[in-house]
Image 1 (cartoon, rainbow, N blue to C red):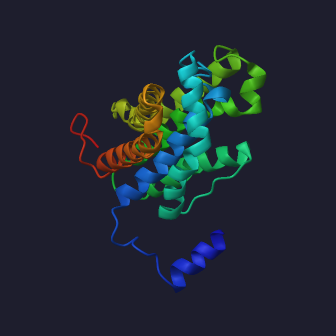
Image 2: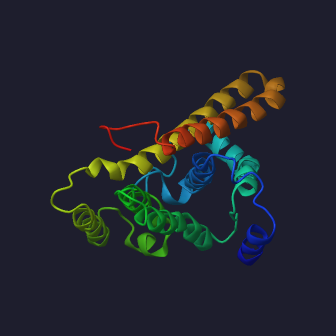
Length: 239
């Protein structure tokens, strides 16, 4: 697939890639990462391995099952809009989730400024607070308070200090991506709960509620992330 993409891009055309905002394509990629975070809640929890069931009720189960069953529609947009996979093997999925850390950090590093800090530390923070709990290593350690896990957090802090240096104290930049992803997760789960309540009260509205919830989730996440990634939102006069 990678070879095909390379050949097609160089010999034929990239469709609307030249005309479509880069921030919009990045938004669709992050939307896929948000879906991955939601689908992995039973295994990883939301942060630091818990809670595995954030809303201990029938509503949460219905929302999660609904997203699990129909998330492919949302991911299909990202698949068409970007070059991405939707594999079944969870370790390969984790690798693809982490690839944005590698790709985004390297790309930003060779650009002017210190934007690489946002990508590298931001996606790395998502990994140590969520994705790492899907690995056999963390399942063996059991708890986020174990000394091995604490050592992992300490290593992250050391990397932050080394990467920012002694004179750059804009540590808040490492929160940009994690906060954006978690807000998107909460937004999608919230819409799911609204949709669930709507359908429970008016079952006949199912045919309208489902497309509307998906449109609101997809448009809300993609457009808001595109707005942020395009540099329109500033924090402390920073990107």
